[in-house]
Image (cartoon, rainbow, N blue to C red):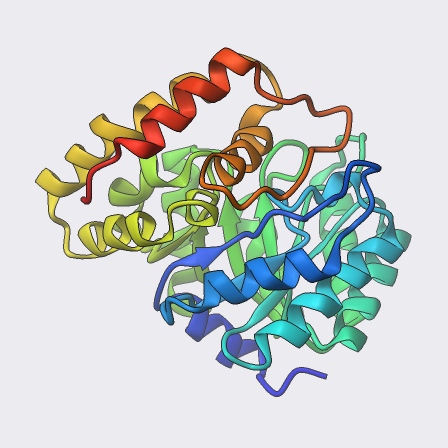
Length: 307
């Protein structure tokens, strides 16, 4: 059971950088709790994280069984031991999402990241009902991930917030600046806003101007000090440092990522291997980087300069 209220959790998230750790698998694609917890401990050792998202998108939520999601979340809660909020991945259809929400709360998670429902494109009414069912199934805080087939209008979001006090966060994965401004204008500080576009560093500075004070950094998995320095440059609105980081690392990194579909997670695990902290393979239908792509990524990481 979380010791934080949903509102307390949301305020903590808004104050710093968020980490989405990869999920560790062995050669047979089975979860490795020991290495995963060791990785979480390493990420936490820098004493700067304001949230750790277990079994999120970068953690291959979409490839985990509901039982595995609960196991991964439990491992993160145990390793974090209250140092920072743990947010659990949640999603699929309403019935499964409700079960996942309850299991996450039982495991000690402080909140949920509600990913889009599976396959169908719902109406606003259906999406409201789906999100509300999850909110009402748990007492912990809920963050909705606005992307793909789960894009809420500002009016739908307002209705949900009116009826569900534990809906405390809005993560944007759309990149529609007009929609983001409409949401922020209507909801103001009722919500904590999280940047969730891949790769989030690219959009961090312009999104800060719209009230999005934090974002999910996949790069933090393998370059934590660099990621923290970049975040500091964003919060200081140091345009020169931000552009330096984008030109020297982020944009070349994105260029490799964009060479194949599904690489948003694969390239992060490749980065882990490149620094000697392998998290094992990605599960299908994701695929690994080619040897040439991996070589170029490793060279990019090895020559990365401080922001």
